Length: 431
Image (cartoon, rainbow, N blue to C red; front, side):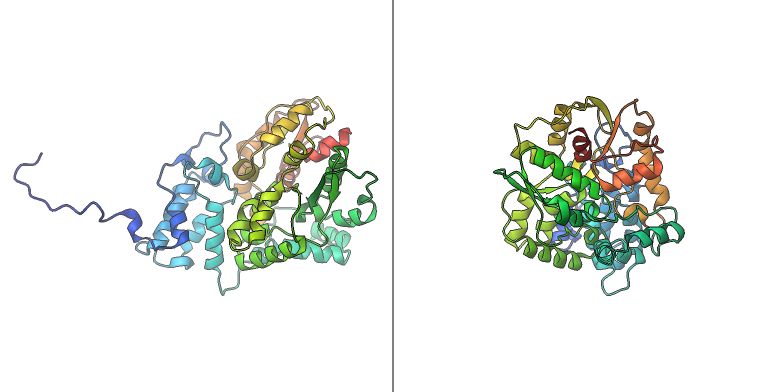
């Protein structure tokens, strides 16, 4: 091809992109990204979730591929030279909603939510963190303290008048429940006249416990109507989600070990109503505690509300609602849990129509953090809010995630009395 030109090309195994990475498990995870760029799709059609912030900004650094490439350069140390303290990587990951959409949508299963948690864990090691990491990351502790002191009413009143330190000023706080779910359970909720053969453990997650106890009460009603006995853990438990999402991984591990100690030997299904908590127990728990066999056992026992009914009460016929339904499939459910059982349950209950895809944009702590409000709203405007504006008359608004319901409440402007509900609430109201 080039007569007279003599060259000495590099060997086949020289100058390879991945040779410069350290031989660590995290580097191996980052190397999953090979640049397919499915994450750069701007087409909102179909079930794809990733990558919400890229769809808003259109910037490569906010795509899953762009973030993976920055992490690659950080680990290589040739272009990004500040290592785990890199401001460039921190800025790119700041708008990652940790929606986990890339786990399900990326052809090679890049898990940017876990990479972000690991980066934040190392980035802030030995330093004072942003205030939101303590307020939102420590949410389970703050809410338990407020409930123990019975301060829900004064806190709600104060939150309506005063800004909360470390939180976005544009966001009103969801009201705290005056009666937490487990307090109701210890009173009248645990009284079960029936003695069915199958027992399920209902997981009192932080959101159901302190912010949406009506969801827990509805689930108890439906599970008992399906012939199942319901029990709760003997003491408070936590999936560690808020600590993982803010990169406080050591704290998350200690919380999860204490949870495993409380649960003891898991027998039967553990029904988790909040999809993000169920995804954390199935995925993050065994990843954070790989040497504890109890972690894997609990992960295998976790069931969503619909999965519990389908597997353990297969002959139960839900009440017929015979009405259209709109809303959103939780992004963690799309990516980690799957929603096939939910679809079948909705069909049996006569709930027609499709839920929107994408991400609601609130994404747990993300939408409450300063500087994220504009992106959070824009994510909701991509699929969720247009679907709700086109709601047909008489339609039920369905969202199993507390963040999704909060985003709908704050942004959708639904007609009075038509609020977003968990599937358990819709079924319980029809019984």
